[in-house]
Amino acid sequence: MQIHNEFKGELGQLVDAYNALAKTMKKERMSLFQRELLLDTIMQSTPVSIVLTNENEQVVYSNLVAQKLFNIKGKLEGLTFTKIVNYLDDELKNSCIKKQSGLITLNKENKKQTYYLSCQHFQMNLRQHTLYLFKDLTTEISRQEINLWKNAIRLISHELNNSLAPIASLTSSALKILNKPAHFGMLPDILTTINRRADNLKVFLEQYAQFARLPEPTKTRQNLSLLLTSVQRIYDFTLLDDLPKTDGFFDGTQIEQVLINLLKNAHESDCEISDIALKVVFENNRLVFALVDRGNGMQASQLQQALLPFFSTKEKGTGLGLSLCNEVISAHDGQLKLANREQGGLLVKFDVPAWDKTK
Figure (tube, rainbow, N blue to C red):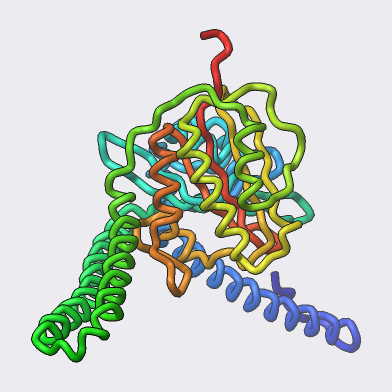
C-alpha cells in the first residue's frame, strides 16, 4: 500500500521513506512469488511422487504424480495420510505406516514393480513435518537388468577364455613332449597347471549355476537360538534384545546361508566387529531380522541396484551374494530391504514365516 504524500517537513520525509520501503517489499514479494512458482512447477513436473505431512498427519503439499500413485482425483491437501495410504498396495502401505525407507517390490498381475521410498523428518515453522518420496524404478531396473545380463555373458565368456586358452596351449605342449622323451620331466608341472585351471573354472561356474538352480525352500520348524549360535561361530555379531519366544518356519539351510552372506558383507564394510548387531522381532506371525553395521554404507544408485544379479560394489565381487539372498527371502514370501543409517552404516532387514502354534 502506498500513501499519497501531501505533507511537508519531517512527516513528508517519513511518508517518502514508508513508500520506498513498501516499493522494496513489493519487489521482494514478487521475486519470492516467482521463485515459489518456479519451485512448484518443478515439483509438479518431476516423476517422483511427493507428499508432505504435518504433525497431525495431514497432507499439506503433494504433486500431480502423487495423486496418480494414490489413485485419488483432486488435491490431496487436507486429507489424512493414514487414510490415503489405504489406496496403496500392502507392501508400500506398510512401509509408509512404519516410515521405512528403502526398495519395495510389488507384484501386480504377474508383473514386478519396484519403488524406492524415502521418509524424512524435519521441522518447518517450529512444527514437525514428514516428507515422503516415491520413485518408480521399474523401467530403470528393467533396463539395468538387461545391461547386467549382457555384462554377465561377457564376464563368463572372458573367464572361460582365460581358462580354456592356457589349457589348450598346455595340452598342445604336452602332446609335443610325448614325442621328446628327454622332456618327460615337464609333464607333471603341465598336468598340475591344467588341473588347477580346470578346478578354478569349475568353482567359477558353480557360483553362477547356484543362482540359476536355487531349490524351493523346505520349510520346517526352526529354533532361532540354535540357528544364530551356529552362524555366530562363523561371523561374530552382537545380539540386541532377547529372541522371540516363537520358533521359525523356514528352510534352515537357506536362511543360515542368507545370514552368513549378510554378516560377511558387514565384516567387510570397514567397521568394528562390535558395531555389527542383529535384532529379531515377532510381527504379524513373521520373524523380522534386522542387521546393522557402521561401515561405509551405499550410495543411492547402489541401493537401487544392490539386489540385481551380477551387480557388485566390490572390485572382485561376483554380484550374486545379495541377489541370491533376495531370491531366498522372496521364496519365503518375504522382502529383503537395504537402507543407509543416519550416522553411517547399513541396515538390512528381511522377514520369514514364524511357527504357527495353533497348527
